[in-house]
Length: 505
Ligand code: MCA
Ligand code: AMP
Image 1 (spheres, rainbow, N blue to C red):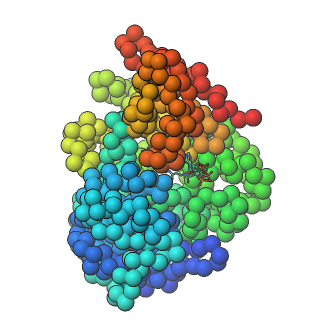
Image 2: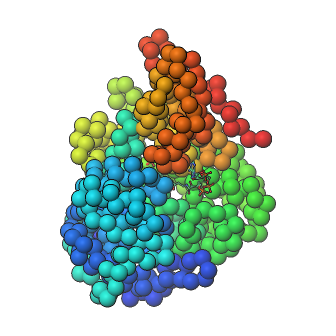
Image 3: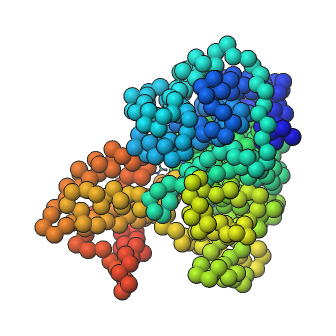
């Protein structure tokens, strides 16, 4: 095939007038109309100088047009690099320069902040607003509604997704055509998606979950989506009656459970509820089943690997587990020190291998070598075990990671910023339980001798350079950080002592 990812997800729908996206307000877009829009964008991107293999950095609000940008990139062989809309100009500057993106596509409202970012990297700036207007639309106007699909091999890059790192520097995970396509094929089959499905889609489309898991599966199945700009409980309740399936992070489920309108009659017709990106508490699982009669299907994945495991469609969906390795994915538990495989039942490092596993980190061969073994196993940084029946559970993290509402936050990035503030000797950032976001960020600050750092000014500094979801929800001054005899900061002690800061009730 000329371009397997494009042909299987998009090209096969050419001329298909079946509905693809249902929008708020009753409008809908057919597959055919969507593909024509994408083709016009592909022409505009070529005209803007994007050649096959070039990176297109994209920070725009969720909209059908934003999704068509993804389709256009795949059709034109351009590497798609979506970025969280919450990222600040500082954060974006790194992604654009590190990736060498040739074009940055942003919201028209952000041009003032981002023109300098684009200029600093020599990238061209194009705009796309939530209503589809902007310089991209201008450039696409009058372009042909078909585009000759750029041939790609299965190993060619389709996307870069940046994932934060333990050192504070984000890493660009390079995902190939095969990584994305193989995983979508497995998931359609495993979760029984067909052309009759209607997915209630309220996730952002700049991460694996909302983009590759949700969208690729729907495209491959020829199904449709109710495409909401973001999660909003009222909108979810209003649209659930027309959906057959929903995918969400645990916060979606806890927020729905907080609403008395979630009841059996509302969702009795639904076929499947899927959760992932963060641990689903067993109590959420149990409460959701008691209220709706549905057992949520929990699965486990990563940016670098797409989906690795899933609870079964038929058979027991076990609360507190992430199910079985997906077909084609090998999963083993190893000793974090030696790398030796551990016997079933023991806790250790989760490693995975398969066509889903990424190609490596962009321009970081050493990081790649640290995490991706020569034999193809990727060291996930998650600690887990496999029970006698083969169910995998994640029991902890070997990596210092906070997951807030499904967004990953590496403490190091925040600690580096806190350490730089006037009067701060050192800092530690930990995640503590939070009733809405699962975990949230708390920063601990040790002042320099005789200094009294201004916590409000520090919070302001964080607000200026870090995305809102990374801001410490509390800053606490300490005389010293707890350390073990080796001098290592004991974050577990901080978590234990301050774990109740946001306790519900
Ligand atoms: C928004 N805020 C957050 C978060 N989201 N703070 C911490 N953590 C968050 N996740 C900020 C807002 O800016 C706002 O700040 C305040 O918190 C409350 O806003 P709210 O209206 O409640 O936020 P929201 O728009 O409702 O967003 C919450 C959300 C959203 C629906 C949980 O964050 C979301 O859609 N998360 C999904 C993330 C996701 O797709 N992850 C998949 C990654 P202020 O109060 O100052 O105004 S892919 C992945 O992890 C792997 C591969 C996998 O397995 O899927
Ligand atoms: P990301 O960096 O966005 O790719 O996030 C991947 C990480 O999210 C994994 O390494 C896990 O730590 C976590 N994760 C994803 N799904 C689950 C799940 N179902 N349960 C627990 N953790 C999860």
